[in-house]
Amino acid sequence: MAFVDTDYSGLTQRVQRYHEILQNTTNYRAIWLSELRQGIMEQLQAAADTSGLAGRVELRSEILNLEAVVFNLGAGSSGLGEPVAAGIKRDLIKQNGSLVYQQLFNGKVLVLINYPFIEKYGQQQPPKTIAIYRPEEIKVPFILRHLETFISEITNWEDYDDDAPEPNQRIGFKMNFDATATPTTEKK
Image (tube, rainbow, N blue to C red):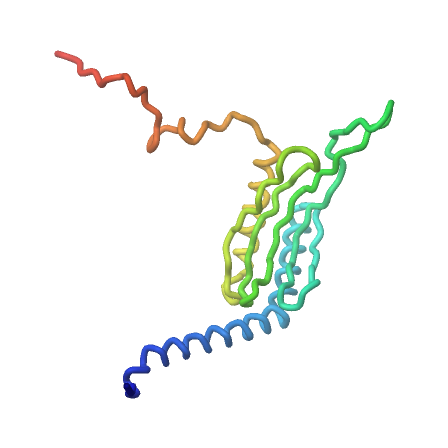
């Protein structure tokens, strides 16, 4: 059985697409190194300075091509203490949260929020993914929007209470109804 050139057209197109994607990864990594990493760091610092948000911009570069730019609100005493001996308590440390721009294996950039947490107090909430971007998609307005989302999310975490209605108690879709109640009609 022999194949003719036209039989390979689908495979040829897929191979071309594969090579384009590999080249994109190389290009995205080069953009990260040449301008994007520094640009994100500068924009985060400028936004923090302008808004009065106390945090520090960090570059985590332990693994080549998997770097991350992190806007970290730091850590400190949570105000909670664990008794360790008579009259001695150990403060529980609170991580205040961070906004992360993480390079992925393919050169794209994952933006996520690490929520605050207090050691030895419940489970740490999983990070919230904001989005995954190609380097050319990350613009200054996006960085500001990411910071706004970050601040909103950690503010909600700090202000936790049970005042928010349960998902099944909200008005509208999925509203709970009494299963035994029957609709009434009024006679005129």
